[in-house]
Amino acid sequence: MHTALAFVTVFGYVLTLTLLPVVLLTKKKESVSTVAWAMAIVMMPYVGAFFFIMFGINRVGRRLRGKQVATEVVSRALPQLARHHHLHHDHLNETQRELRRLAERVTGTHATVGNRVQLLIDAERTFQEIADAITAARSSIHLEYYIWQPDKLGTQLRDLLITKANSGVHVRFLFDAIGSLNLTRKFLGPMREAGIQIASFVPGQSFRERWSINLRSHRKIVIVDGQVAFTGGMNVGDEYLGHDPHFGHWRDTHLRLHGPAVLQLQEVFAVDWKYATGEELTHDEFFPQPDQVGNVFAQVAAGGPDDEEAIFHGLMFAAINAARSHVTLATSYFVPTPSLVSALESAAQRGVPTRVLLSGPKTYWATLRAARSYYDSLLKAGVEIYEYQDGQLHSKTLTIDGCWSLVGTPNFDARSLYLNFEVGVILYDRNLAEQLEHQFTEDLLHARPIEEISWNRRSSWNRLQENFCRMFSPVL
Image (cartoon, rainbow, N blue to C red; front, top):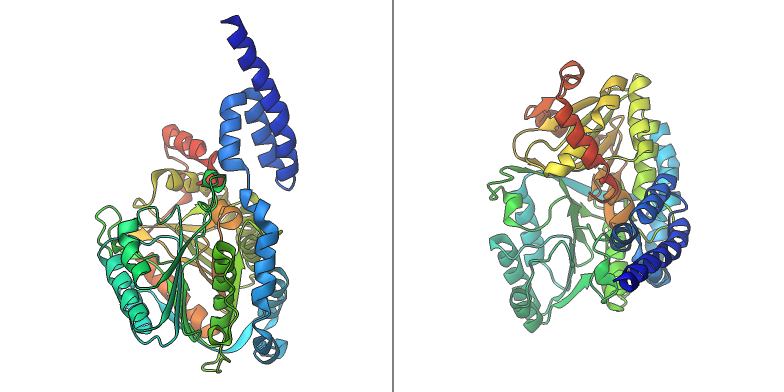
């Protein structure tokens, strides 16, 4: 008995001394996180160590060089795009120029001219447009999704892909192993039999990476023939059509793109595909010379835990700080970093009307409580906060001064900004910004405003729940 107790004690000390240097080396840019993990490991050696191994280690970093190589190889497929479709400063106002410089520096992509971008806010129309584009495909269909449900909608789209594969179209399907956990061999079998190439994105590629359940590809991408693309907040599942009784009506935002920006999305998919499978998609058929089919200035941004800098965090922080007339933010999950909270508060305190629309009672219990823990200081600073009541709000949109917008997959939370692989489209376009702001105003008709006076009267029990959930904000 004494021998076993001594072994447990000694092993606990060894485990602690082994993991502390790992915490200091891997969390050096996040002082709060460093202290929290170190205290957890010291005060609760086994429990703290277990949670750090499960949630604290970024194992994708071990394959960082492979991801960088994939990016370098694929980027060489776009020389013509780089030379002929870049946006020049003289087309932009001061705010747009400032944010374009930042975006091009942190993303490595360039704003492009000649795009046509369609805003999609109705789920049925969105999936019909995707189905129509797939039906019209002649050479290739590339899909990357966080969630693909094997339900009625998922099966219909699957069968359509099988039909196109049987007609000779090359179909590649990349899904996240955690988000699409419901996909079974039985469901995927007919796709493989039709010749569709299927791969899962990390986590899940190896036994070691199956511990990395905290790292996910949250991207939603469809690209057809390298000429038309879709991205935004909508995954594939019946709940997005409002058929899930828990969520009810599903309010989301998606984009349909034509023009040079499509090839930037194709590059994102090609890098992810090479990272997951090793196959290089650098053939000319995947990157056809784009036509200028519209007048929208657009730029694709992709970010993930393999980047040295948190790309979307930097974009959102800079955009809010650059605002001079107004800020509108819609997000399904609101668990911001301290600097993003400060940016919102600073904008409101400068006299910039700052409105935030968040998910309401239909969202996940813990996420909602964590979000509410930030309301006090935001309301005090003058930020207007609204909670959506008519079902589930799943949009991820940010507009600045009616001339700059970000639409895509990242939420306004630490998970999207630091842990997930995300993608978005930056739009330097007044018309689309006005459409997004008009939709924002329409959504407010189905939202409850949070009033500071009544909010401050909430019970201590509610405050306790909020602060408890906030402790888990880095992984919610």
